[in-house]
Length: 491
Image (cartoon, rainbow, N blue to C red):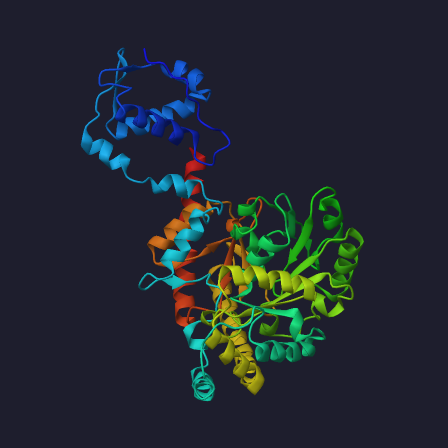
């Protein structure tokens, strides 16, 4: 019987069974384990490698599938092949080991599928969180391009914080929301998502706590988790985050930061009330917790202007304010901004320069023109009218097709209706069944820390005709799944 003194390293990110597979193949390739050599029984191997028996079973299954070993009833497991064809395939660089050992975690499987299915032909996108092609202001864009074409003298790298003219324009623009920040306290980023990435890299150590609403868009990302930080979902009521939840979950021995979308929350569409905003600021000040305010949906109000941003009441520099034109104009510009204390912005800009040397120069030039010329404000006025029409039509369709199987909110702005099913069905089954019917949905369990029976319905992307077809078809799929689940339970 062969002697094994090697042990897999449990501190490695590479799965234990893969380490064992790689070790045995290496021993075969060097001739240490010859053809005909019998491997010890599974129980003995688990003792030798100091792992669970299930890990051994997984390793042996892979070795069998790749043709290196063979198991016979009563005869144990034997090495049966060391041919060059097999070994040459394994002697190549194994990229899987590198991928598995990387820092950044992969997207949730459902989100990976969403990202791929969005670009399939004839798919109806019921959950996409961006303005649809119909909402793009082509005529205004042509005017901007004409104006910018004469201003482009070069397209070199810009200073770390971004184009000064754009930062000045944004500084002036934010005054309409009672936010007073200088251009030196603003960083131009490639969308609010990059702002979150920079914050995670720049000011938070591993082990930090990230407090946020439950459910939350941030839950669908792995920005903070990949760096060893912990996401904590906080309960909400009809006013927003419950302040006592912040106090109860504040880390005493670890750094803690609050991430919130107080205005037209993603995915629920909720708006934090003015009194709750004041209470939240006071609570975070008491607990000495900084705040990331994600305000990318603010300009998309429909029924009434929402309460002022948290940043407008920030007297102590506790709030990092995130804005973007991805939701209000077009995500393809890849332009957003962070406003905060100047020394924090300096830190973020230094890390940004280490990652991409600055956001698109031509996009920054165009957004400067968009906002500075007043065309952006004109576009928003038209966009709100279109979003109101789309929201109301979507609510009509839901009333026709979902009234007996779901409940939902009536958003006052933003893109999303947070629909809750009345029946407890598998959202994974629903997602796959809908995808087969060319219907793409965003199931609520990608945003929720607990079990969710919700769907995020977006009225911003698909055309009204597609929304009607897609939602009615989705209603039929849900009803079919409910009948199937009911039938199974009877038996």
